[in-house]
Amino acid sequence: MKEESPCRWHVAVLLFVVLQMGCARGLNTVTGRITPAHYRFKTVVELSKRNKLRPDGWRAVCINARITEGDSGATDVCKFEVGLPLRNEDLGDIPPEVAQRSAAITANRAAHLVLAEARPGEMIAVLCLQFKDRYEQLLKEEIAGARVSQCETEGIETVYFDIPGGLTP
Amino acid sequence: MSDFTRKALIGIARRFYPSGFPVEEDDYSQPLLAHQRTPEHERWRSAWKKALAWEQWDQVLAAVESAFPENGVRDATQPWHSACRRCCLYVKEALPAGGQTVIRIVAAASVLAPLYVTYVTTRTLKPGARASSPQLTFEPPQEAKPQVDALTRVIERELGYRPFPLELAEVTLPDVRVGYRNSLAPPTLLDALFSDDLANLP
Image 1 (cartoon, chains in turn cyan, purple):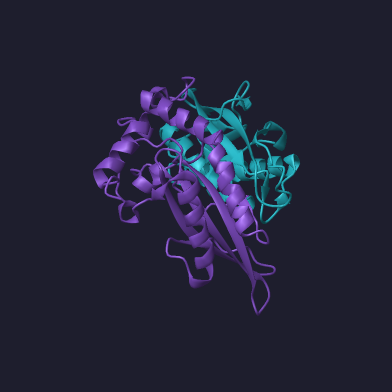
Image 2: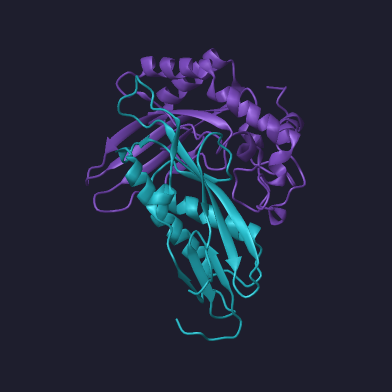
């Protein structure tokens, strides 16, 4: 996408970099990717022993993603927890690598959708909420039963994302 | 059911969820968001800890399992991302043109009050197509009635819970912050005492 306006800012989230090319919605370019390896899920509820095949169990991870608004250099953090069943009706047992891949792919899509339409100066708190909402909608289509909300579960891993150095998209 | 009036239920919600913490003011630079540092949230967390160590819940699962051994019970709890423990039975019906309908019959027991809801979701899976979104109803279709009745009996017997008055489900709680919701709109009693997405099942 070509630069169309002097109204410009960058947002980086989850290793995403967004360069706003115009003031209208839907004109931002989003680059950068979160990878499956970032999703270091921990089992919160084990599969029950008497239940061999049915939906059950829970795994979760907390992600702290630093967001940097380009021109001002202001940074803030969006924190969210991703929770998934260990087994659901559609997929049966969900291996960790499948959970990680789905979680990463949908996070990229959700961040792209939300940040591509972000307005300059939009509050990080509201963007973070919109991201969590969009992310959950997408993730539960891939893994029924998935939730994305605030970090709350004790004893799970917190994974930090930061954008080192400059924010050139 | 006279105990669980509109006023009483709002009071229960306010005991576990603080007021006056709008999303717009969330400050993620702190270890916890401001609403997570309130006595109300501490009570909510204690309720979840108790609910996850809830022996009677295992008895609920065992009782449903023995009532429907051929179908089998599923635990559909989303710990810390809702306010209820859930169990469900699934009924699958083949469609004449291929594919199937999956009916989930669910009981959700609040972790905040001795109240439950039962409901049914229906989803259609057709070969080569994405599954339809689950349709939720609190009025069970005829084919799900035996399972709903059985879940109701088990929950009332094992937990001593009472039905949540569904006529109050949509009562809104202005200013109340329900942390697991990703919405700027005020939560309802159903959102606060059970979940904002009951149709989302594993």
